[in-house]
Length: 366
Image (spheres, rainbow, N blue to C red):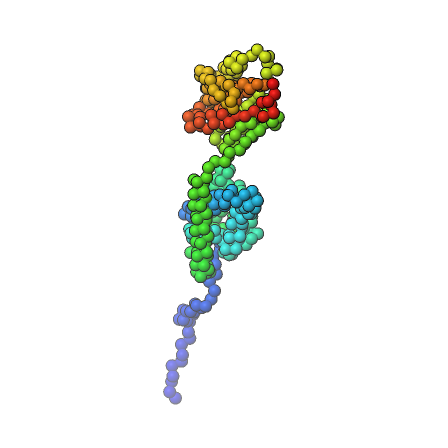
């Protein structure tokens, strides 16, 4: 009988390796673990996205504000409400539904939940709510957010920590749809272009517009001043003044103090009253310097004008003092600003001082 060689057993080492299933789904990486691998580059991408978003929102706000101003009060109220709702929704809706803002898409980063998906409206609302704290330009800008991204293990700002979200690089999301990303790129590019057009419209409108004048009248209806937009009543500045207006942002102020002649005596002259005012200044200011009296005419009434410089609470201040005599009153119109700003603001302060008017009823009394 012929002997046939028996087959050799196949060992595990000799078994052919299993071929990977090319149709198996690619599992997204764990977002928390992925975020821990990022260095400082993610901070700069997030910062750049933040700048882009704020530039576009500023352009949109400038354009809409100019449009509202030209459209009248009804449109203005409507548009202000729309802006108050629209700007927060820029983050809530876009990030919640897509994970992107215009800035994030431009820098190829995306806000995601723990599974690598867009956060959803709930988490996005929390992230956006915390922007009032960590990226508020009216507080300390994006400083809290920047510090948080740099020092936290998973590169999260305060809003991410509260909502359990992450900002990752788009290339690290295997399941990200290139088709959807391309579609978002087109839509967001159009939105960005519209914002820039709005901004250009706002700049042009601002350049062409002339400052609107507003008349401010004292509570007792005795006196009034006229100033451009940006000024407002400021009753807290001086309790004894009949009228106070200010633009605190630009550090410029004007007030009126009125005294009836019946309370001062009929024999007091304009020059004597001006000397009393001058003495009060000299007593109240530190290192005061008072200029010469110069005659003037304000609202067809005789007046005396002089400048005063000195220190108030260690700040150098310069005043334009105008004392006006009407048939029934002496009026002090005091306009001032910081000494270093005086040269650039002197003409405006003089214009407001010269706009002084006494009411027609009072002026007619003798």
